[in-house]
Length: 451
Image (cartoon, rainbow, N blue to C red):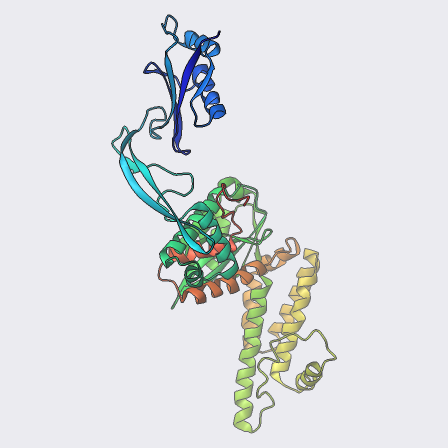
């Protein structure tokens, strides 16, 4: 009859452990065939004491320890012990045990908590910390499954206070879930190439407090957020991309802010600057509104003004020219008004964005700019001079049909985030919320992603 060795398997925590293999209290190299064999037996036996054939084990032990004497009663114990992450091979000693509690998903509408004693590990360097557990992240007060549920609620509700009230958690716990999820998602981002970027500013607090928002135009996601909109702030937000990814950027959409343009020329050597057509339309609309206000004031001083209550008629677009509003506006537009001429110049410039060839777009732009400068309408002339200074950025739109439409869409989401939070005092929380809701990150933990 073949003799058998007693294999004693000691249970342990399933995370941050390595198998310690001992033969009569002599340690076995964790990477040796003997230890691998014992680990396989551990997986087979589960957490029970198993009786297995000793021939293979003795052969491996003899190979690892030549001349080692053993008898049939030798005890090989395979235990789960904690390794020292600082050295990678030493064993961490258990300094003590601490009682921890985690909030879990409710069971049959009853609040459920997991309570366990966690070992405090003493590393060779003298540092002491609690061992990580499999069901929760380190220093977290809720389980991973509960955290995933909170993330899904936040994605649906986008209001921390309401979510915290619904699941009976405090605000700080939910805020920590957002911070961990965003950090987890940023760490999982792949370094895939980015062809087109968008750079825009967003108001952070009262006064002239702004944040620079960098977006991926092709994938409609926020890449990074930094405080300020000065040159060094724009350089910082572009530095969040690796050198290889910056070299692969073909174009970046932005407004005509000088700091952004200088940062793009410095950090993105191969990228063309494309001025966003929505900002150009805004400048032209503002010019038309200035003309309307000045003319309305002059006509009111002389008597009755036909421009009363017509502010938004000059700013909005009416695709259906046969509707009642378009017919009423046609009578107003055909009046001999300076505002009508300014509006006509503004509307005629929209044709510029339809050109596909740079030379054709250049001829149209030069002709339009000449007509605008001869109009003797000062607000229109001011905008025309600005557009002439940034002519190359406008003409680049014919090569790269990109806009900051995604960034402008994110602005409405960011405004909702600010409104739900009633403002932010800490920029880190502001940045984390934007990345959480607009970054298209993989937020869930890997262990619960499939649930």
